[in-house]
Image 1 (cartoon, rainbow, N blue to C red):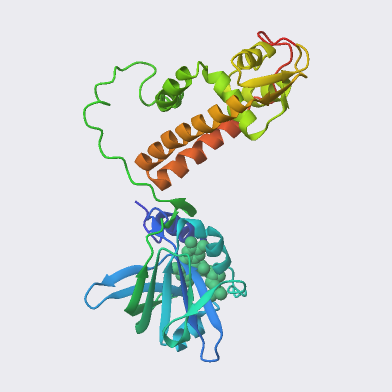
Image 2 (cartoon, rainbow, N blue to C red; image 1 turned 90 degrees about the horizontal axis):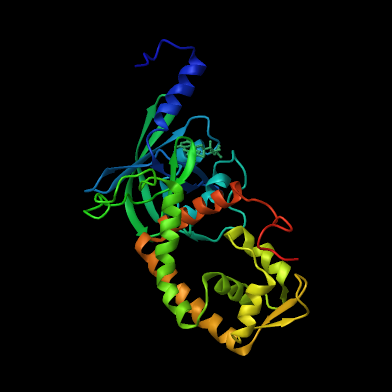
Length: 332
Ligand SMILES: Cc1cc2nc3c(=O)[nH]c(=O)nc-3n(C[C@H](O)[C@H](O)[C@H](O)COP(=O)(O)O)c2cc1C
């Protein structure tokens, strides 16, 4: 417990702010227009609902804000609930007094107030009540009209921007019955490996139909976007996914009629796709995209983005660098 009078004022304000940061909020931009016709706005996370009938909302504005006189004199304001993609805009509107509207597409709402696009929801309000609350002024507005755009929201928590992800529903049955071991369901390496294996199962049947191994498919898929690579180029790209690309591996693709090798048995030999190879790549990429779309659909857009973000971060942190030369299995 922290009695509020036990610390120096600076420490107290910081600790109070940090404790408030435990409350996850959305992020809004509140806008208005002065009588002289100047557009004004700021980033605010103090927004909240007050009443459903009549519809009312509130937010609070620091008395030190440059925009205070504009909000005090105007009869209207608009609250824009920001979408996850609007972090930059939030930064811009958190700058003090800057020209925050330049380059933005603006519509005009009630009383000529500026309305921004791209947000998740937008409330046009008539200022109903203003209260002084310590170092802030609390504005309560009666909502006269609103828009709801169903975009995923931007979140603010612990002093940082975040994304909202729905909690998974409690796993019924299958997860609980998994055998407990050191590779338990909470072990990251196990989870990544098993997820890769299971996602790949759908494609394996297609690969087998064409007599392809997983690694040969990886080579073909790279040639699909970067034809005419050398064996060494392919090795450079693929070694980070766990395989070394050798002349022999590519020769197997050439024997199956999917690729053509130009040059002798060395890493500088160039590889191109044959007509058959290109046809198979198009077919398999379509199958892989269908599997991906299905998985992303199950996760939902935000969770899929977060998962990719986390995996990219692991990949960045654990990047082993270029492939070691003359390592086992690689013939130069
Ligand atoms: C996520 C976030 C939430 C904020 N919430 C508020 C708020 O609720 N009220 C407020 O007065 N300032 C808030 N601010 C700070 C203002 O956006 C900032 O002080 C801005 O410079 C004020 O602009 P102005 O001085 O041009 O009026 C917030 C800033 C951020 C980044």
